[in-house]
Amino acid sequence: MTSDQKPTVDQVFGMMRKNMGSVPSAIEKATEVDEEILYEHLRSRAYAMPPEAALDEETRTLVYLASALSASSKACIQAMANKAKMQGISSEKVLETVRIVRFALATKVIGDAEPVFESLQNRR
Image 1 (tube, rainbow, N blue to C red):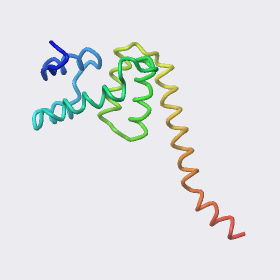
Image 2 (image 1 turned 90 degrees about the vertical axis):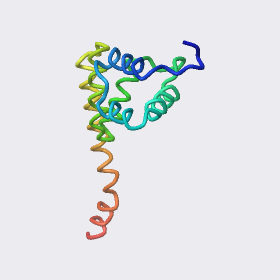
Image 3 (image 1 turned 180 degrees about the horizontal axis):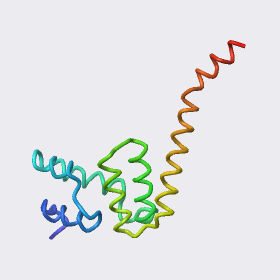
Image 4 (image 1 turned 90 degrees about the horizontal axis):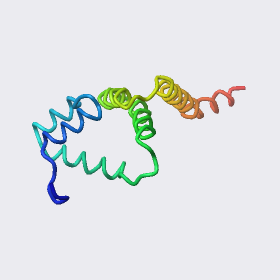
């Protein structure tokens, strides 16, 4: 296959199964409706995570997992949980990632509540 040819859907799905253990059902359904969504998704992945990038694959997976957790993206959370397992990322690292996200979201609530705290201060 030359660089001008795009991989077939079966090739892409095979790569996903190899890397994540399965193809996310949303990707399968989207591809059935509009195959170009799959190829746009591949282009976006290549943009976000080029081969010459600074982060290693384990770090990328943990960052992606953290982002998915923050965005409440169940499909991406499942995909990255599967990928972490396929990559052999330790339970300790995955759990630390979850804890960091939990802390970040708790901190966000405090930050978002700043006007509430100001209002309460003004009551004194």
